[in-house]
Amino acid sequence: MSDNRYDVIIIGTGAGGGTLAYHLAPTGKKILILERGDYVPREKANWDPQVVNVDAHYNTKESWLDKDGKDLHPHTNYCVGGNTKFYGAALFRLRREDFGELRHHGGVSPAWPISYDDLEPYYTQAENLYQVHGNRGEDPTEPAASSPYPWPAVSHEPRIQQLADDFARSGLKPFHVPVGVMLDERNPTRSRCIRCNTCDGFACLVGAKSDAQVVCVDEAIKHPNVTLLTNALVQRLETGPSGFEIKHVRVERNGKIETYSGDIVVVSCGAINSAALLLRSANDKHPRGLANGSDTVGRHYMGHTNSVLMAISKCPNPTIFQKTLGVNDFYFGSDDFPYPMGHISFVGKLDAITLKAGAPAIAPNFTLELMAKHSLDFWLTSEDLPDPNNRVTIGRDGKIVLSYTPNNLEAHARLQAKLKQAMKQTNCPIHGHDCHQGLFGRNLYVGQRIPLAGVAHQNGTIRFGHDRNTSALDVNCKAHDVENLYVVDGSFFPSSAAVNPALTIMANALRVGHHLKSRMGVSTEVTARDREIALSR
Ligand SMILES: Cc1cc2nc3c(=O)[nH]c(=O)nc-3n(C[C@H](O)[C@H](O)[C@H](O)COP(=O)(O)OP(=O)(O)OC[C@H]3O[C@@H](n4cnc5c(N)ncnc54)[C@H](O)[C@@H]3O)c2cc1C
Ligand code: SF4
Image (tube, rainbow, N blue to C red; front, side, top):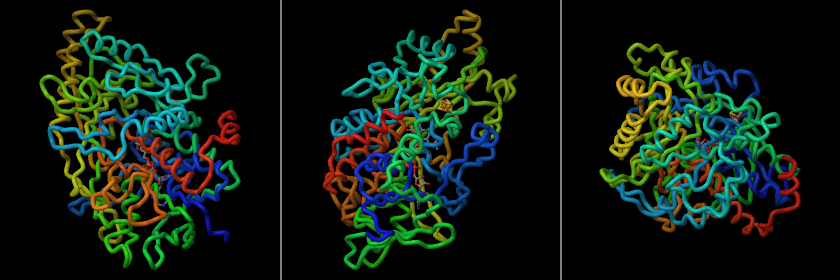
C-alpha cells in the first residue's frame, strides 16, 4: 500500500467522525483522519467569557452568505473534536416517537428509515463511551433503555433544586439532564471535572468534558495504524471515470495540495460543510454534486428553533453548573395544544460579560450585573421541519450559502408560554408569600430566538432513507450513488426532533462503524486492546 493509500479515510473529528475513528481504530486497518482545524490550545483564555463569548476567539472567521446574499458569520468551530469541544454535553436519546412520523402544528415530521430499537444498543454504547451522567426513569418522555446510565446524574445546586421542587409541586416532572462531564461527586478530590461555570460554550481547560477529542480522537491515535492530519482542509472528492467510487481526496494542508486515496471515505464535516463538500465535488457523472442523484444534498437543512429565556426573580441565582434540570412535559403537546412543543432545559449560567454580547433588554431597576446574578437561564428547543428550500448551496467565490426560513414557530411560542406559566406558579421558600408576589410582579422574561448564525444543531442536509429518489444515503449511511462514500455527521437526520443532537450522531457513528467492520471483514467483537484502552482511563 502506498504512503497515501488508506483502508479508511475519515474527514472531520467531531461527534460523528471522532466517534467512528475511535470505533475503527482497534481493527488494525490503516486509517487516515483529516481535520481542517487544529487542537484548541490549552490556555487560561479557554475559560474567559470575554475571549470566548464576546471576542468569539475560537469560532471560525470564515464568512458565509444568507439567502439575501448578506454576510453570515457562523458560530461554529473548526478544531480537533469539532463542535463537541465547545458543546454543553447534554447527551439525550431521541424519543421513540421521533423515529416515526409525527404531526406538528406546522406540518409533518417524517419517519426515519430505522427505529429506536435499531439504534438503542448504540445509544447505550455511546452513553458509556461519553460517560453520561443521568438518572433513568425521571424524564417522562425518555424511551426504554437496555441499561442504566454509567454515572449518577449531576446533582442540582440549591437554587435549581428549589426550582425542580416548585415545578414538581405544580404537577410537572422535572428531571436531571444527562450530561457528559467526568464529574465524580462521591470522590471530589479525585474528580477530573471541577464543576465550574465555564462549561457550556467553552472548551474544558482540564480535559474533563466528554468531547470527541478527549474521549475518542486522543484514544484512536494511540493505535499505530491511525494517522491524524490537522490543518488539512478537504477541498474536493474525486471519482474515477465510472463515477461509482471515490478515487482521490484532495486536501489543502500548509498551503500545499495533497492527494490521498481510501478504500472507504467517510465524510463527517458537520451538516453544512459536508453538504458543501459534496456540492463542490460535482463532476461529469455527478453534475448536481457528488452522490446527489436525488437532488437532496444540501436541502432540508434544520437547526432547531432555539431560544434563551431569562427568568429574573428577586432571589439571586448563585448556581455554578446550571445545566442540570430539564422539563419535557410539553414535548408531545398538552391538552390545550395537541402538537409537539419541545424541550426546556438550561444554558450554562450567564454572566454580565456574556450578556453584553447578547444585549438583552434591561429589566426595570436591574443592571446587566444584577440580571446575571438573578437570572435562571433557560434553553428552549422546538423541532423545525425539513423544508427542501431550506438549504446549503455554493455561492459567489465558492462561499457557503445558507438559505433558511423558520417554520413550525407556533410550537415554540407555545413552549415559551408554558414556561412563563410554570414560572408564575413558583413559590419562593426564603421570602415566603411576599417574595412569591414579588416574583410574579417582577418576573421578566427576555426571549431571544437564536439567529441563523447559531448553527450549533445543524442537521438534515444529506438525509438517509430507503428510496434513492428522495434521500442521498442508504440505511447504513452509504451514498446511494457512490459505493465507497459514507456520511456520519448530523447530515443524515430526516427530522430534527427537539432534543440536542450529539448523542444520536455518536450512536449512529457506532452503528455505521459496526457495518463498516462487517464490510471490511473484521471482527465486530470488542478487542483486548479496546479493553486495555478503556481500563487505562
Ligand atoms: C456552543 C455549543 C453548545 C452545544 N451544546 C450541545 C449539547 O449540550 N448537546 C448536544 O447534543 N449538542 C450540542 N451542541 C451541538 C453539537 O456540538 C453538534 O451537534 C455536534 O458536534 C455535531 O457533530 P458533527 O460530527 O455533525 O460535526 P462537528 O462536531 O461540527 O464536526 C465536524 C468536523 O469536521 C471538520 N471539518 C469541516 N469541514 C472540513 C473539511 N472540508 N475538511 C476537513 N475537516 C472539516 C470540522 O473542523 C469539525 O472538526 C452544541 C454546539 C455548540 C457550538
Ligand atoms: S464543568 Fe467540568 S467538564 Fe465542564 S469545563 Fe468545568 S471542569 Fe470541564
